[in-house]
Length: 245
Image 1 (tube, rainbow, N blue to C red):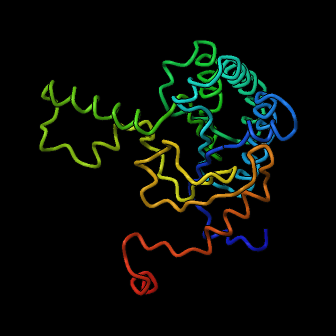
Image 2: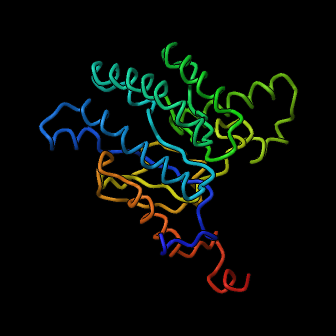
């Protein structure tokens, strides 16, 4: 903790939680065992982010591509999602955490939608950490979805095509009103983005760790933040220009 500069904390951290299946295999268990233990890491990281007063934490919980996994695993993930939301809502309220969700939520199972909406509504007045769950999400889906919304507005002559700009595009993303992440963490030693927040991470710092998600703890989050704070973020400028600001 004494290595972390409280004045240089990332406003928004996003995490690709990868490695549940491999962790389970290493322990001679089925993949679903890894997902259940991954919930412990979620709890740890949410607590750690809240303690550090991070404003936004986005967790890549279920992608649109995950539907292609074995049916048993998908069903387990959906059941686990419902039970976890149900169990953790009181803790979120107690710790002043506000729950949000991004993705194609309308095409999740009705039971998941119900639990999710209930938790979002119950935590809506909380003013601390905003915990964003990316569910049934993919960046390509989000971008196409935004384009469809804008196309309808152009067809209905609500806006002129010449007025379509970056700000309008952002307004039609599921992350509208959520700042772009400054730090993206991926666990399990994989070096790819996996269709996650492709628009939003244009200037995000990327941090990769070999730790599998069920092994990831508060100290690992702090290590990622320390690494982030030791980087120079230039946003297209030179080092000299940054140093004179």
